Image 1: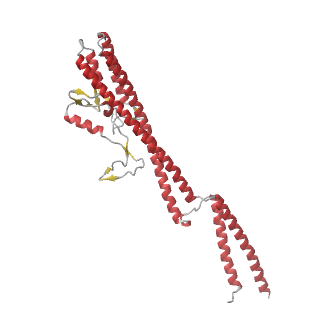
Image 2: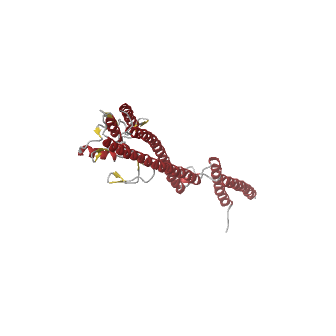
Image 3: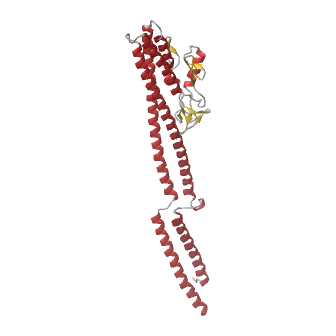
Length: 330
């Protein structure tokens, strides 16, 4: 088979161009430290990188959300613990007041202190984080609690009302939600968020403070303080009623403590969620690097080999051109 000089030159030019392209590609990988700079260079890897980067951005959003929720819960837990301390001090005063040795003047002094503690509890229940009220359920921009003539109101509703309509509204308000996506696969069904696919950040102050009446006894810890104060100011004191109020107050104080415990449990869950998202962030970043970025040692080796191959091709070209010139002279 006869091969002409022109054929040899054409083949040489084609192969030399390939070597030049490979050298340029290897040089770019070393300089940019990337496996590809355009989708067309590696469509499969580019698609995988896009998916990983989206997951990375979503994970960062979840991290921002969980950090915000943690701050919200920390503030709420701090306020709730403040309320438990107030209730603890009030309980000590109540026990002192029902002691048979307390004088009328001492009882009045205790009653005055209990009314001050009422106000302190309400102020704690109206705590804010920034511009957000912590214990207003889904309503975060309005003051939730107010003492009116010594009785507590929640958004204008008497928390101790026996009116069925008012009680129904209060129960609905306790169940209000503000759902946040923390990376649990938030999804919807029938226009509503599927349970356990999002985290509820709302809590009503009615939960720790109590509302309604049971067996004719007020269930709200703030109102109970007022009733105890009223009894202590009487002369003579109705010891039986005072003892009943003291027992109910102790139960309400226990409910408040339980609320703090629940907050602490949820805060621990949020911290573990944050740790998981931090780990995900590291893992996703490593995967992105493995897809998009080169192993520098391997890239430099490939570049050196491409440079060697290109230089060798140039030397081969010299011999081809020399032979072609000799053939021409003949």
